[in-house]
Length: 169
Image (cartoon, rainbow, N blue to C red):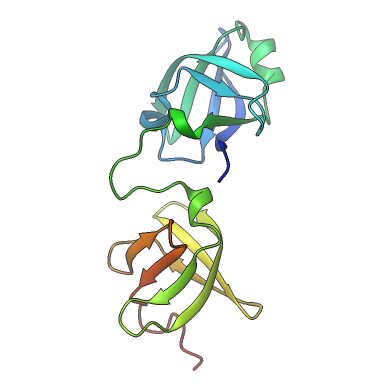
């Protein structure tokens, strides 16, 4: 398992005092608030203190130590920020996206195998599992009506597919 996980990408500046806009790749600003330090690489070799975070129009506005003006904030544009896995607290039934990728997807009732999660996407309404089997892709909404169980320890996602999701017709 990866020790450092992506939480989002800095997309621009906010104001003139060095705040940055972060496109969250996690559950949002409330999740990010739990961290004191974020990291600028996936190895955790370069940490930066998180001074504040607040939600703003689907984004997170961050104040980072040493980023004190618009020029310093602009220099951060495009950077991906990471958190240390051991610093994160998850609610029961929550999982890291990185842990879902690679899980087998099976029918919760019949055990029929649908493929392997290759990616987790989000276009607004909900997360979507990109499932691949024999080069074919299917997209499974990560909603309670469809996804019945995620067991990252067993690398297994159990679903009850919606009509037409995996039908060949």
